[in-house]
Amino acid sequence: MKHSKLTFIFAVAALFAAPVAAVYAQEAKQAASKPAGEDRSYLGDYADKKAQLAYFVNGKENPVVYKETVGKTVVFTDATGAELKVEPGSDTFKFVLKADKDALNKAGAAYNKGDWESAVLYMRPIVYPIIPVAGLSQGSFASEEYVQIFVDSLLNVGRLNEAYAFAKALPIDQADSSIINAAVSVADALVKKGQYQKALDIVGNLEIKNASQYDASPAVIDLLSALRGAGMVKQILPIYARLGASDNPSAPQFKLWGIFCDALLGNRMTAEVSIGAVKVNKDSDAYPLLKMVQGYLKETDPKKPDIGAALDAYAEGIVFGKVSCDCMPELLYRTGMAYKAMKSFVASNEIFSQIASMYPESQYAKLGAKQMVKIEKKKVAEEVSHEDEDDYDDEEDE
Image (cartoon, rainbow, N blue to C red; front, side, top):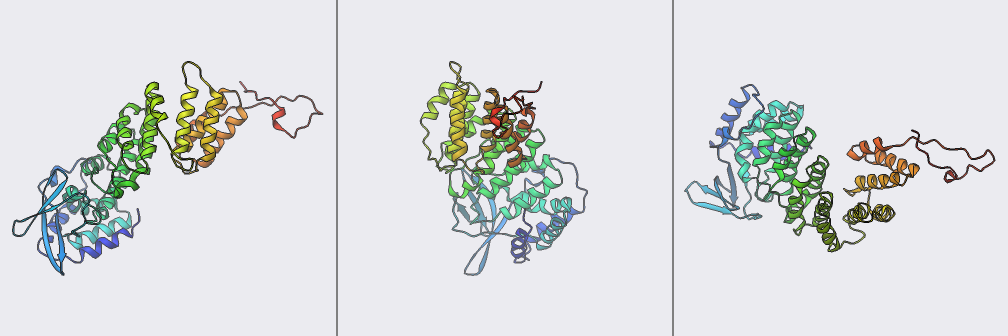
């Protein structure tokens, strides 16, 4: 999280000294004067608090209050009671939050000092009311400036229960990528604590179908891979299927991961039919994943397993893939395991070492380390040239 994001918030907050902002000030002061309290959902505490925004026309401020969301249309009311409707993705109106600058300044100061508890306390009365409008286009209302700082503070102070309830309430099916990423960061933290179902709950209804959401794809792919590694293969398959059917540029990757899940679950016929319909270019980030799935299907063919053909597919994926490809650590690991199955321990050890060097934080670095084999080289004769290590046999030291 970059602390520079706070600059925008304070600039906006400085615009408002209207009486309506005093409501936020009073709530923030009350909150900050209390102990941090238990780690729980605070949605109910702010259920009757409505987001107060404003837009400007010819320099004139027009305050509005959130009323409701009908379908995916956000409805506000102005001072006369007239309704203002904002459709998904629209940035016709440029809203700013009517918040108390003193509370925001105190939240910012606490955040910059690493005083996460105080930052949470000052931000709560500001950020909870804007949950329903966080799905607005960031070009219409920059809710990310508040949501990201609040989520970051919650995670830094270890308030996972509150973070979970907050993230689950965010309208990420409509929100831009920055809001999706904030919610996914909570899901990531839950995965690390073994709370897999809660992580799944946050992204269960996620859609990535418009350009403003596309940048969230890498974080979502990483999260789903972590859940898959935790055994949630069946549970995440519908998410892969939904995201793979969109116009998202990352749709081929989501689709291929879904096919891989089908293969892992034993749905080989579905996987084989589906993989045949996937067409990706060799320069695509999805290409190494395609080769990994194809290789896995060959390696695990119940009628005629073909490790050699699997290795050919894996090797092609590695050659054409980038180091940054999301599937690369697993592709390398499966390649190493295939070599190990063929008792080519020098090759498998080398690959497992590469994973540890290139992707030290990956789960496959740890798995690869466990698969390393201690090799004892058999000396054939003293006069034999030692120039080529292939002149030695690989032998596992029992």
